[in-house]
Amino acid sequence: MSDILFQMTTFGCKANQYDSQLWRTTLENAGLRHNEGTADIFLVNTCSVTSAAEQQARQTVRKIIRNNPSGKIIIIGCYGQLAAEPLTKIDGVGLVLGRHSSEAAGQLLSWLGISQDKLPRGIKTFHGHTRAFIKVQDGCNHRCSYCIVPLARGASRSRPLDEILSEAQNLAASGHRELVVTGIRLGDFKPSLGILLRSLKDIPGLDRIRLSSLEPDDLSDDQMETMQGIPQLARHLHLPLQSGCDGILKKMNRPYSVAYYRELLGKLRVAMPDITIGSDIIAGFPGETEEHFGQGVRNIRELGFTHLHVFTYSKRPGTKAALMAGQIPEEIKKERLHRLKDIHEKLQQEYFSALTGKTELVLAESADRGLWSGFGEHYYKVYFRSEQNLKNQMVRVKLSQPYEQGILGELTDNLDQPKQC
Image 1 (cartoon, rainbow, N blue to C red):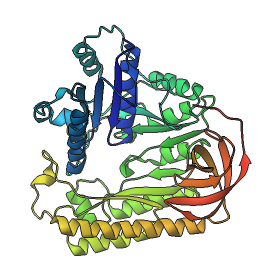
Image 2 (image 1 turned 120 degrees about the horizontal axis):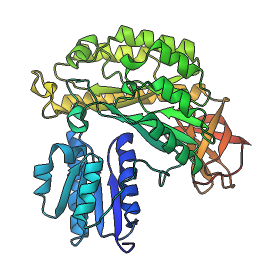
Image 3 (image 1 turned 135 degrees about the vertical axis):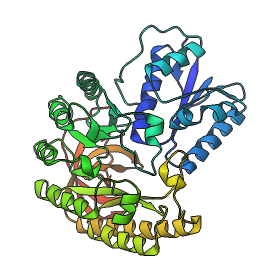
Image 4 (image 1 turned 45 degrees about the horizontal axis):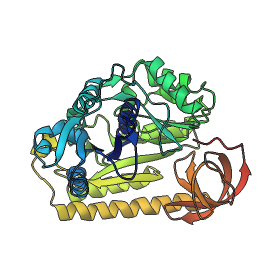
């Protein structure tokens, strides 16, 4: 089977990135070879969080079909889960499977004519990445009015703790020094996120643990205390706010107020004074007036974010928000998005300017003509020059000035010897 080549294209979140690695492991264990050049089989792992993501997936699928008329095209992921019938009708698509599961993996191998008794339950390396993502939970039981993810991913479910720890040990042993713990609703992890973090911190070779995202109402005082006591835990959290206006939060079916969120950030900053906070903001939710938006902007500016992921509301079929009155015209949504992007850039530049002269512990990832880059503990990209091969090394960098979408600095200390992934 080693003469059969496959490629993977992945859209969407960190959970999708992990799923692609698991699909890849399934095929490689069955004897197929991953190849970036020509291939016989093409898997496209799709996203459905916005209509734009679905459109991008369709365009990519059609491009692959045009360029590889004899190839076998397989659509997987959330879009495949939600729209299998119309996607199957695209001329050239061979199979649509949806989200990863043992059943779906078995169906794929059967469709390819491959007999496989034992399917992998995890990954041992994260190909093409210095930092490895590890999915510990999938699905969501909550019903935010705008969100299609529960329809695509199903109910919340956690991986067994021993399975996660075994996978984390394998990833660390293969050279991955940072693990990004990911899931659709991390706070729903069972038995608890605190137990998971306390277990991960003892794995040899694991120098940094990062949480991908946490919902504000899932972050308890006990969890903050646990996080405070784990030195490997990166001092950055992504806490989706979605709107800075209480009226819009209620329409979104988000179970908190701006005041609750503000108090939560205060507690976090007492527990971990050096923590940085990023957030998601939706522009143009149904019924959002200019007054709502202005109130939200004022609150967003006051909350002390260092990073914002901003995007326009996208009407998703099957969600309550899609049926709401007061749908906002696209031109107004885009105009509000631009204003939020301006706020993000200003907040980030102010933060980067305040970092001048400080040092950051950076995991070096890649270099372009001697200019290295990697992420610091606080989840911003750091650039520095060195002619050494520093890939996958922890280095200290003295920060000097904003640069590109991150900050430029000077290498001051190489903390260890190379550990290549």
